[in-house]
Length: 283
Image (cartoon, rainbow, N blue to C red):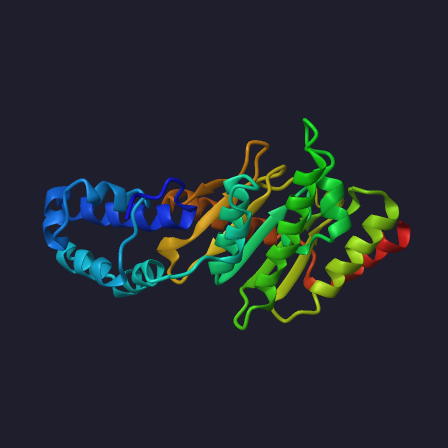
């Protein structure tokens, strides 16, 4: 099978973890190739996500590398054993790959912690709000691409209806709640939708009012996606050039600490719901 031309962020992560494991063990690509009975050139492709690898082969490599973390090995084997294409693959070739990578990340997360200052979470956006946001992209997008982005954003919400959906903990700044993309009526319906989302057992929304003053990470939109094991957690940061995915342990620790500090200046869950209701009444 020829190498993948565009591996997903998750496929790349699997390969990266296998490479880190090999290097930590002091083993060469020739050693890995010998274990698997493949040409040496196959190993770099596996470690870049351009070639697939079976769950059994992941266990063979991990065992011979001497990895002592059984939970990590199990999680990597599960990643390797994933078969079939996720719903997001229907948008490949239609939307930038970053949109697909975000949907894939959300689908496999066990918990998501978010902090947003200006925008509202894509998972919580109404169709009207999403369209109003994409209408502001500069330079302006063709109408067909706007509609494709809106459709994909609406499809992302299905992760919340999975049999075992992730926990979603969201911190929203007051600025995000008051930003009137699409006008007052669209904003009112959007905030009402967020309140309905908080009726779900797995969704929590907390607000940082303007009067709380400064806080770490102001201006950033952060999603911290927890995985089956902490070593496979990932942070996604939004930018005008597309999403950036961060997974180094030092950066993961930084963003965990940042989110904990943010939580200390938020309103509690029920007062946050009341705060959102007040804004709705003002629109």
